[in-house]
Image (cartoon, rainbow, N blue to C red; front, side, top):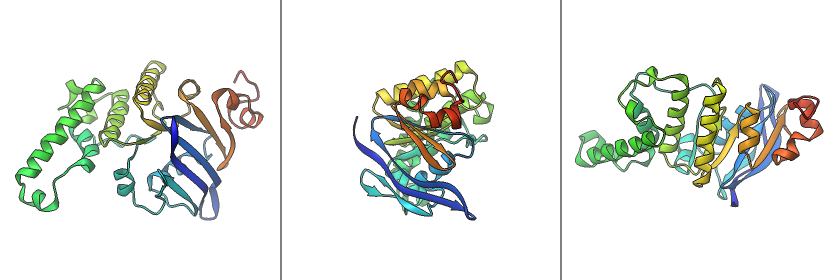
Length: 257
């Protein structure tokens, strides 16, 4: 691991006077898996939305590779290498599995507006390249055989993997995973964990929000713990699981929790 890919400084977010995130600062190193955990309402999803560009911070700054991005719209952050999945699946159910992944790939397309309007050769070549790249992602996640099925016909677990494939189609440098194991039985959750670990071994930097503590503790190089919008602990799995504030606020009153 080297360098700081993401840097958050003194981030605050208020909704109608209520604090969602308070004076939060942390870093994500290139090549690491950093988890963000905390009880419901701790500010995790708000944090993800601020990094992705869905929610504007009340104050504070967000930096990607030393470029300030907190004032950028979502599409510009995606172009710079931020991709995400969602706690509640955002799958286009009436589109095919392949088309869903192609949506995630379009920001890497080369055809301009004029070519698109005229349906020229550049557009046709671009669409073929997008389809080929999307199919490669489906093959990577064993979904190629379902490429031309409607996405809505997939199982819930397959939809989770499809959303991950779509996020990766844009070749991100930072992958934001919002509860990728939520709603999955343990065997499927472990499969998703293996996918995340494999991506990280290939160099992907991951910021992970997850309630599955087995996954968090086994995958994460570093863990940030939030409560009431504030950081209460940060460190390795061993350091976090023994921190008294974490035991009290999230993991229970004993280390066994």
